[in-house]
Length: 278
Length: 265
Ligand SMILES: Nc1ncnc2c1ncn2[C@@H]1O[C@H](COP(=O)(O)OP(=O)(O)OP(=O)(O)O)[C@@H](O)[C@H]1O
Ligand SMILES: [Mg+2]
Image (cartoon, rainbow over all chains, first blue to last red):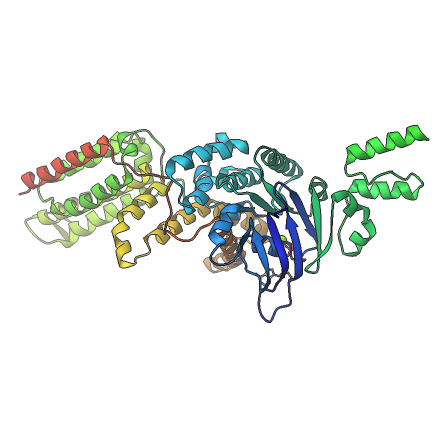
């Protein structure tokens, strides 16, 4: 199978005299896949994201995006294919109004005006921000700005969207809305998705998880298997979701689940089936 | 303070002048500023005054708002008038206040200069009153376009202006936040001798600058991630377009210029 993105033995450091931030990292993402990357602060997650669209170039190893090797000659095509949403809602809003901001990426790629008008409408609709087309950023909430950021990325019609802690500065409701928006969008358009996050509830929704530790891919697998390794995760300074902890406590008390529950719903199901078996 | 001062503020509206292409407005104002200095008779001043007041009224911005907004300028105008009234010693002595003689030439000079000053301020502030800052930026970018041949960074200048416009409200909000945070720690910006107040600004400015630089860095990264690579090969969403209204405005203004040279003495 052709991987959509592939990291081949990538190592990276910011400067010659700095320590390596990524050490011999290899992994891949398929088309339409949702990959979550977790890891402690400074484990190299954002660095991976920046390498993926050529904001940084690796010292050793190779990165392929949709079959293209990422280098100086391909970065403009790569950036059309890979869209990125950053953490701070304010510092990625370039336009003076919502529609200007959504247009920014398209203007950079020289799209004709008629196409831009059509796509502004479509992408604002996709994130539920159509009514705010003429609003200035200071009249929007953080969550609304992040939705505009997603619309801006969608407008260029990328094949992969990276959310680098895009919900970190939002309240729980804002987070939920953004994740719903994203899931909706991913369902409607064929998109690969990478979410970099400290929010473990986001992680449980992903198809696959990569755990970074000290610049190395430390573990890789489906969320259920990853969370089953609670102790190991805690050793490298990562928290596990409440449900996972609860399940661990319960099995410690003699109520072993037959699978690793990922959310309240699953835990609830497990609990009552367990109960009915007793 | 900022709410009283109208220079540089945009007042949304639906008048003809609001709908003119910003390039038209800039061009007309540019030539107006030049021709004001050609007026030298009662008739010619009258003509320019009618043109300026007519334009101002046609914007349907409340007169009270305009008059109040120009408060700081009124003082300058008055000052100009008084200065010339007493300093110019031409013509016949009209009357004298204390030991100062007022000449007829002084009166004329004072009146005409302060009127000129008033007309200039009024007409130029009509530009910002009826045009969004971003439209002005677009117009400047378009009008400076020919300078690109001489490697003048026109696109960069316009982008800089539009990003500043984008971030002014953000930085204002931030200033407020920081000043509240510092005030809660006992920093006093509002009372005390000037020296202390200036000193109190420092803990406000330092965090503001630090955050502005951080913002700039992140914004640059975000722009690059979205494929920004300079003005080359870029298309534009916002479009300037000359309409019939613009043509009519140029004709009216042309007639004013013509009239001015007829009524000059
Ligand atoms: N511009 C830079 N110059 C030098 N070193 C940097 C730079 N950016 C990041 N680093 C270093 O690289 C390492 C990895 O940083 P990175 O931002 O990739 O971490 P992260 O996993 O995204 O962390 P976080 O969870 O805090 O966002 C850190 O040790 C950091 O100090
Ligand atoms: Mg990071």
